[in-house]
Image 1 (cartoon, rainbow, N blue to C red):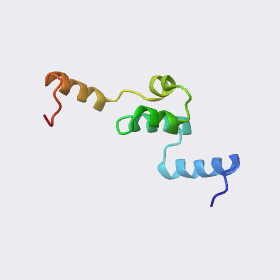
Image 2: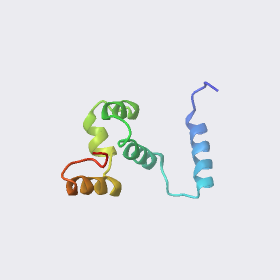
Image 3: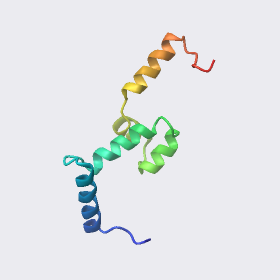
Length: 88
């Protein structure tokens, strides 16, 4: 179906998803933040900025992409290994 979603159709679909996943306080905006945060480790920043629809890189990285515990663990490992990657 190539027809764009109407606002009503979007809201009906969103409500269905939230009920199935049993996360009543979830919002599309929270999912957007989570998506950008998770994708920053696998996509280059310019691509992530583009698919997020942001005109400014800073919006993507300073507002939407959050630091995760995994990011911090990776940074600690790199510092402990004096900057060498695990493959080296």
